[in-house]
Image (cartoon, rainbow, N blue to C red; front, side, top):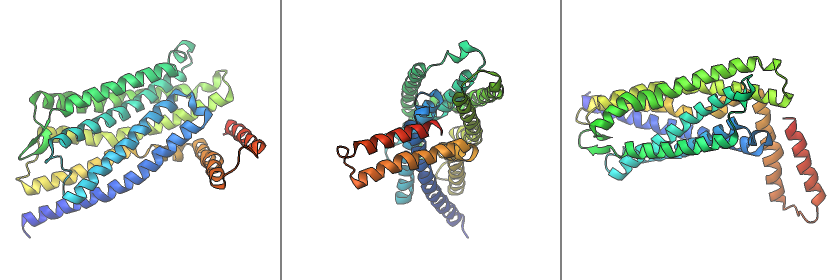
Amino acid sequence: MSSSSVSNGILKFATQYSFYTSCITFSFGVVGNVLILLVFTQLKLFRTNRCAFYITVESIFNVIYQFFSISLTILTSIYGDDRTGRSLVWCKLRYTLGQTCGLATFYMICFTAVDQFFSTNHRYNLRQMCTLKLGRYFTFIFICFAIIHSIALGSSYDIQSTFGCTISNYVAIQYSTFFFYPVLIGFLPIVIASLFSMLAYHNVRRIVRRQLPIVRRRLDKQITAMVLMRVIIFVCSVSPFDAYRIYTINFPTSQSMPMAYAIGRLIQTVFAFINSMNSVISFYVFIIFSSRFRHQVKFVLVKICWQRWKSWCCHINNRTEPDNNIELRNSQMDSEENV
């Protein structure tokens, strides 16, 4: 068997692997993130919670990233590549959009961990330091920074005849190698999220000693456990891909070397799948490690969404049966307080 046929077989396997794994992650990712959005926007308990706000923003960017990722998969399955090596605009746009979603997702996880540390701290002045309004300001400012940064770095990508769509600017290569991948979306968010999630976990272990309402105490424990497990998954899923990206930027594989190029594509596909789990798995981690979150999801789907859907399908007339609707809303509010 010739080396060209082996390399073609590896490329075909990498393409098929990418297609099927992308379809699976897209399905689970969209469903999971939409359910997170439903729970955190429908339950009054979470509407004024800062950590819930950050997780909601993260889920929005995760959904955007899932649709962006599946579009690359569809292009690859149709044309054999993602077309970034053929269109300069798409080459720049792909990395700009991907980096924007990545930065926003990574640092929303950091914001969640930091905020949970402050909200569970035993010092009153630290607990009052972070507010929902301040959190919205920081989120808006950081998203603007992520967009501007991604546009600036994405503009340095160019199409080269041998390497395809890659960074062509020497300064951008040095920046990506020594700061962007190892620090900005590597070491820095991992350290921030890990440190503050462990500190928040330490705070919540002493929360029994503080005089807090039982609803607030249960919520702090729930959010802290969810954030800690989310950070662990974040560290495990992001680190391998960041290391691989640093390597490929400095040592790109030429398409004139079919075997090396095919192996590189396969490795990239595997690491990209591991990295994509970061935008998929939040909901399922919360479901597994938080029994209270499971009850909240069930309550939202059964008591809120199902009731609304049933009322729309049955065309309940609000004018003729106002008492029933008022009673339904009141019962939902009473049940929500016990979730």
